[in-house]
Image (cartoon, rainbow, N blue to C red; front, side, top):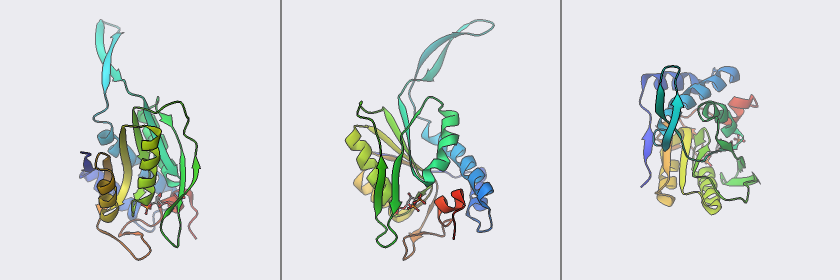
Length: 209
Ligand code: PRP
């Protein structure tokens, strides 16, 4: 059974408050996304496997631990791009594979427009990056693609989620673990997260109109 991990930490509450506020400008919004991603990264990486790695310190030999799995970061374009750098900073050897999806405004269903996963077999662990999980449609489409690609260990990494979206993902994929900074209770009639933070992609890329 996959885990649902929701952060509860003073730093997370503080940085979420700034992230959500309407007047927060794009430059600061991007920084907040990065700060929250680093805090959430601690949890999503907690169970990564390691292997013994012998080194020599300046003083003595020592058997240390290094990450041993092949890890893929899978940002969902566009907004997921804002999560890549903070994760790569901590996982510099990770592969990054992009999935392009937008949510049709009329139906709120995801439409895939880019997928270029290689044929040469899968990765050990895939971390799906998207700051928002609303209905969960985009996340479910990404998980379906990664399962077909052959990934066994899929983890969802999202800053803010709505409870209905979480429920939909967990119902369809009970084996997938979800890591989020916070969960909001509902969606409005336009399928936006309430109270939410607006449209993360537009706020990251300064394309709000
Ligand atoms: C947003 C968000 C997710 C999706 C969440 O993307 O970044 O990808 O919607 O909604 P869902 O859980 O109901 O599928 P959007 O369609 O705004 O595209 P963008 O990232 O290009 O702004």
